[in-house]
Length: 512
Image 1: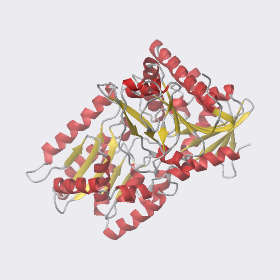
Image 2 (image 1 turned 180 degrees about the horizontal axis):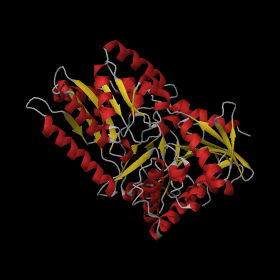
Image 3 (image 1 turned 45 degrees about the horizontal axis):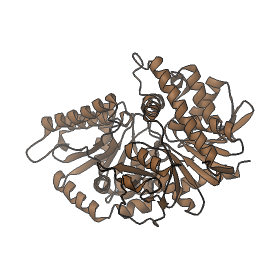
Image 4 (image 1 turned 90 degrees about the vertical axis):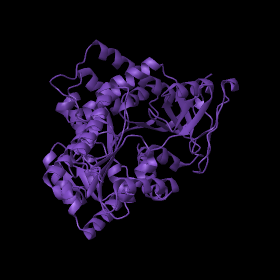
């Protein structure tokens, strides 16, 4: 049955606002997703007729999409209230799915073949495009673009085409479409060919590689990704630095013309008779949500447990990350060890509270990195720990309430990524910190553009420099720390998720 073209606003992303767990008895339990995109889309309200197109990520999602028939999930507006999960059994049949609470937005979940999804998601998006934009390759031995990669790239094209087809089916005449991130870089161009009447934007949540590094990609792939994004009316980024790098790549790889504004910054890219405007939207922290959620009872419980683990009178250096290669957790631990070596006065007076939540464990390089983090933390504790003091408090089980508890007690926040599109942790901790905290921040994080003036800035590769920065941060007087935190919190919340989303939506709606 054909899908009616009726949606005036569409969002496309790999991960949607809801996921399903499949029970052993065949039952399905929906869970609402989090993140800035979920909060942002809720800003337009459930009556806007928006549709969110996403991929089925696992067996539960695929089963839900199949039972839904067209892939449209039954949703409900809860007014932001927490709702107990509903369950459904396989006997309920197609169309009888548990209601998913997504803020009232319509969701279409695509049941893409598992082998195609795996090749596109792990083979290209997370193992190639992510590595290029975060400068993660060990270039003497990688990347190797061989026949296996070519098969994965074909899957990535198929995956993007499935999204373009779905969006073309769902969109009303002249609709606005906001495509998200490196998973869907080809969608704007593919969708333009299918529906030239649409206003299409693409947003990159990652950094963008400089031309010399970007050209590690095979020439046709490098050009294809750029052509895909330039199929949109707007290409938006988290910082001006990433937008400039994208424009530079368009000029170097495609020979495109970069249009510059009065300040000299790249404002648009002209290529093959079309102009794609460039936008910068620095996603901020959701202050109201964070402050309310961080005072909940479960956070108080975890805060008490952390304080007991740390011990009375000790300062805390807090980091909260996934064990993602770009987050640079290992060098952070090495810098902390160096602090204890060179500044023995901090022994037994400080604890490094490190939350390293396992990420992408289906990839061997990530499993190995996660294990290296664990081993290094154990080595530091064995070398410097005493009967009443454990230098590193490492937690690897993902627990949002415990993360918020750590935010509250942080004296120093360590955010030292090799490269990061933004890094919301750098923005969230100053908002929640109770006594004020000093932010030790990598100059390679997107957040540096907004927060660098009030942070202790580090080169993420420099262990000695990061150790000195930690010492400086720990010694910062209370009054200075309080003042810094206030300024950091103000900058961090300047563009909360709802405003971030709406500014992009309005820019596309106003574009001729």
